[in-house]
Length: 545
Image 1: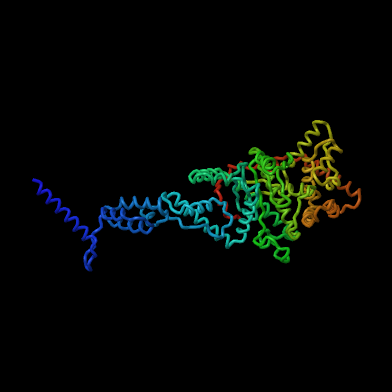
Image 2: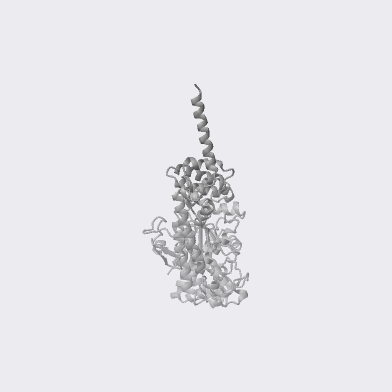
């Protein structure tokens, strides 16, 4: 009964043996290759003792060539990029991934721009399975290319970028989450008190790090309007300074090659691509106080709202409260003037460093020169009457009137002699028993207004002469500007001082009867800017025309 089944089994074994023999027999020339099937390719894949990247590529191609091989090809593609080699292009292409093969151009050395960071991270990632971040990376690379081209072809742009590299090396300023605008010759930076712990960010997983950077970038978006306004203010003041005093005082545009002094001998030349002026603005008094007390450990006096650093030449200041828009405006026009004074002094003196002294000139000239009103399009009108200083003097007058005292007034010889805030304070305490710092600054402004307006402006040329003297002042020479003022005003005797005091007293009394509202319109709110277009912070605006 069992013989038929045995015979069938022996026949099957014979057929299997024949199949194995045929499969191992050498193919004869002209024999057709057996067709691939998923089962055949699976069997050969399973039989491989060790699989290389080339094996994966070969079998991916075989699976893809089969009508029903795509599922196995996709599985094989995912396996190779996760377990063997993430850069097998054939597997990435099959999965629909996009390659980002670009690096940051070598011309770019300052790399803290967001578009540079995006390209760096995209280059490290290389492959993208999401089209949105891939498109963002390509857009950032285009920005990198444009930036690199400008660095190569635009010396002024390159000089401003060098300044950002300098900030990047400053241990105190580098960590701030700041943004900046190129407003030639200024690089104007703006920050709150927020600081970034980059080391902590780089320890985060990539997705969390990207989210954190995105949030930090988003918090800087409102800075654009602030920076655009600052750019308009600072460039207009600089343009006016150079136009009014450039020829008279032998001043050259600071962003010209070698800072305008290519005529200096090789040993004295500096700033080959131009001399940018850095302004760092903190968002408010709290951020300013935190920076000085907690970051650098050097508190500043309560009345100090900004200064020019004597070593770096940077302006550091802070914005006033939103309700004090005019105080904020005039503070920045003043700092723009102080920055010009510092750098044009260096330009005239073979780039030697300069401390901004505390005297009648640096207290009075900037408040007089830069006094302005501002239109809604941020055009400045230089009115030469400083409403903030006038209001402070009127406050002094009101206190004196209410207390039935005479309005304190510095004799001009003393006003022009005092140097340093401590000397001013000591003088006020000894003479009137009062803290007179604000009075001193207000009367210094009034003195320049006197030179400008009194006697039909006959003394107006004295201002330019004093500026020229100031720009050539030797370092730390006590009484220098007093001597220059005495000479330019033709004062040789005490009687000359007395006559000048009498004339100034008449002008001063008239000044204190002036209505502050007559000076011009109050400045618009920051949000009141019809037609405002957010600027490209990396597209340098030239000096205002």
